[in-house]
Amino acid sequence: MRQAIRNSKRAKWLAIAILNWVHQTIGASPLNWPKLPQELVWFFRSRACYMQQANLQQEKIWTYPILFQRNEMGYDAHYTYQAAWAARRIMTLGIQQHIDVSSDLRFVTLLSAFVPVLYIEYRPVTIRLEGLQTQQGNALALPFADQSVSSISCLHVIEHIGLGRYGDPLDVNGSRNALAELERVVVPGGTLLLSVPIGRPRTVFNAHRIFDPNVVQTFVPKMKLVEFSVVTTQGKLIERTSPMQFFNEEYACGLYWFKCER
Image 1 (cartoon, rainbow, N blue to C red):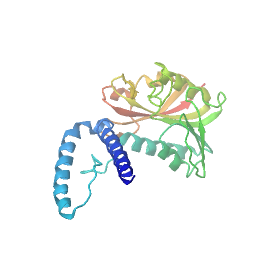
Image 2 (image 1 turned 120 degrees about the vertical axis):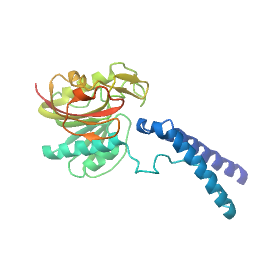
Image 3 (image 1 turned 30 degrees about the vertical axis):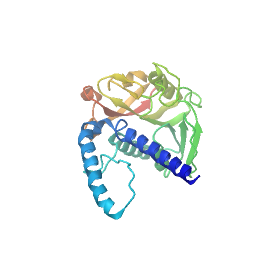
Image 4 (image 1 turned 180 degrees about the horizontal axis):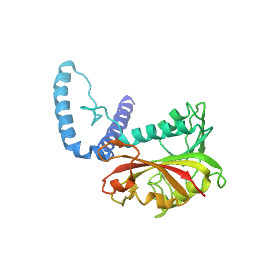
């Protein structure tokens, strides 16, 4: 019986280790892909060295690699900068309530500290925080009347819609339809904060789509572009620039501040 329990625990940790390997390698940010070979060499050399030391103390060693954190503090430039960018714009607007559609949960939990937030997410999420409400919903059928929302954000989301990555139905027009739905609910004079991957346009199935930065605004014809900022492929934030300069990017993040004009 005890042996069966030990074997079960080993199988569990093996599964966790395999999943972590997948996350650290295949699932790494595209910005880190060029560094992967040298990271793997470093990891195996370091592990072998540590094993020699550990053997002297009869220490049990499991394998759970954490890569890309040796030389600098690791962070995803897209998600870090877009959260800072959006939060600062929302603060300047002085709004009474904000709606967010499926953006990063860490962003909305922090945002709810200074403005009430209703968070719409396709996959159910259970979290209780003062100032934050959550509701299951679909970006293609938002639970709001026409022209009823004054402030809404959707960060690094619409590029996934229609690719089935999160259990949603396949739809080649998913991103375009989601943008039309966001436009539908915003009141005249209202704000839409949007971020999407930009650069050479293509679909990377089933991860995401990458958009021509100049085409995004044509998907919301009733919106006026107030500001465009960008996180470049190299992870640099450039604020208040022009989308025309970034159509040759490999995998950048376009930050769009739209105002509804009907």
